[in-house]
Image (tube, rainbow, N blue to C red; front, side, top):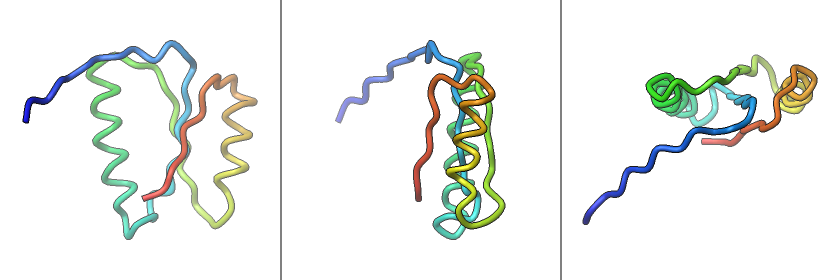
Length: 76
């Protein structure tokens, strides 16, 4: 199967909320792959790592107060 690689520049001040322990550490491993791609493409971003249960919502609000226009969160 052919794979098409597209490079997009995210035109927003972007924040990522990552729970590094989610999925037995899978989220952390995935984050490092994403971070590598962002760095290679010169993308500006900010990452917030959760440290306790329920903190993701607070960190997303903090990202907005830090002028993030796009906040990305997920689970593994």
